[in-house]
Length: 455
Ligand code: GAP
Image 1 (cartoon, rainbow, N blue to C red):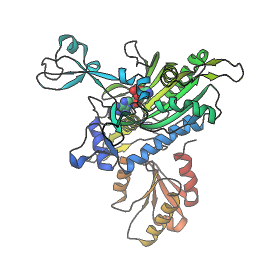
Image 2: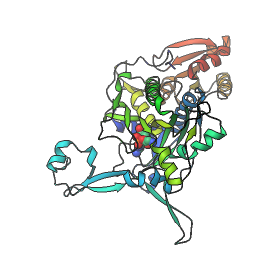
Image 3: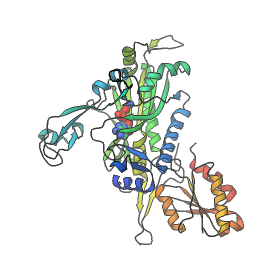
Image 4: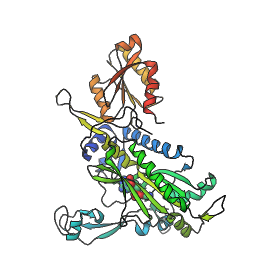
């Protein structure tokens, strides 16, 4: 999994303000605020036409690398609502809390673990210097109710972390798929948290999507598999970003560990928000299967078919966010380049990896009032679109059309001009270097597929 020759050799560019990405996302149809016509809901977003293409590509590439390429990994898709006991067993009802302080003067709220140490010590608001009130504790699980008749309704929760379904289905998957330890189960799905301070666009939301691998191992092999997945996941992210030096692995200190983890590393990415978690690699040990065995009364231990040893498998978890990946990739890819002619017409470009870019190719007839050009271009577009996302565009001059595609990260533009009608060749323009080559129409499909398809 390496980047193709087309992926950017971009110079180190300045860290991008989140607002620039918010604005691009709205303008070009990647992300919209949810319920905007009613004033919006903090921490909840909708994905537009380009956003959904990018998300699908990100998801599919993850699934391909994690499930399809690993013989000992399979996938599931679990439900969002589960039995309420799940969340007692998982420890979330008791431990999944944020401690919050409110400023007496400006009324702003802060998570205690996000407060600078000096503000905590002096009990001083980082915003206005006012006095901070007594901390309060909030559980992050989102409640919901099953049933319609008052008194018979059962309170339960929208899942606070997607991975719980994997533990619930572990025994069924192991038996029905005849998996033997070590093996893994993957899932991509929504999770819900009543974040007390949702902020920074897609970074901290109330409804978001996670991708998880839960890898079940013999306790004696925990260290080996923990290291394997830590390295695999780090390299996976490195393969799809441009600014490789903005990524690092950081081990959690003892006071940071989640209630289920004995050891953890974060894969972090540096943005304008500083170094922030992108994905967590957790040493969950036997916490999950032991707790679910205890709370459900079902024995979730595993018998080794060769040695007949019976034990509760230990778990390595890799848990990342689809939305955080989406945001980080945009922050990583976004660049505003000065106008080379010195005029005030900068080029905004998304250097997204061609595998992930929402639109792979744009097909552009040089002029829209020349019937032969339009007919040939539409023919090429109709052929390409069966294999990749292709956009046909004949509005405005060719320079403007290139700019529109650059701004959404389209790696290739194909131009059909008068020479095409003579010799059946087209111009292929590459987004990052803005280089152009002429190739025969018959060569176009393999040329593009080679570059936009992962393998
Ligand atoms: N099962 C383990 C678990 O849920 P986590 O660190 O709480 O661990 C995993 O979450 C990943 O989910 C994070 O690394 C982040 O990418 C994403 N994530 C967590 N909370 C999020 C939120 N409020 N908004 C967007 N993404 C979030």
